[in-house]
Length: 247
Ligand SMILES: [Zn+2]
Image 1: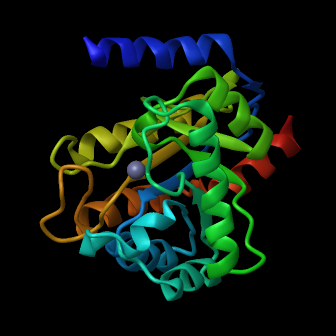
Image 2 (image 1 turned 180 degrees about the vertical axis):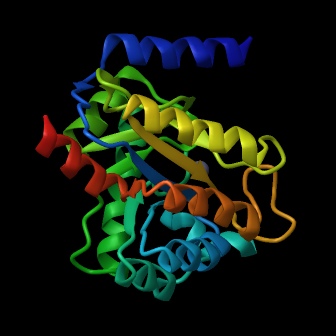
């Protein structure tokens, strides 16, 4: 029941507050995004994308940096290295909070805190784009997020086409235990034909991945497929520059 209410509330947030974007592209765009993000994403994810001359977007929660889970304890060096290799760092709240369960002011404070912590870690770096932990959003949070960031990514499956909601961008999961390489290839074929914006997302990129991640080989296969088809692979921020330039 709670899950139903949550889905309903997310839908309501989508319906009651949405900012539609014009996506009229001459060629498709693919973005690779990582949430949280685990150390293996900062290492293997960055390396694999770099090999092809690409960069991705890492939506981080800075509380995870010193948290209990070894795998998410990325360092300032990971952040600087990712930035140096043309990746983008985005915001994913400070506490990796489920924004649906918190009073608005608390949720808002948690989003602001992530930037304050970032100012201490990587001075001068401003988060431009956001992703909702667990995809959870309320109308008030969504509205606040829209005043602070250029975009926000949710977790609803799909390719972003003309009229997509800029503050609940759709995504396709790169979860190795759930999807086959063929399925992800088909999604890329789809974006080639509809000239939309396909945002992939995952967490860890390591051997024996979690249910929310993939192995380096699996990840590289998807990136390679994009490269083979000469697809423009851009960070979320660069994709938005491209989309706005074209519309
Ligand atoms: Zn997350």
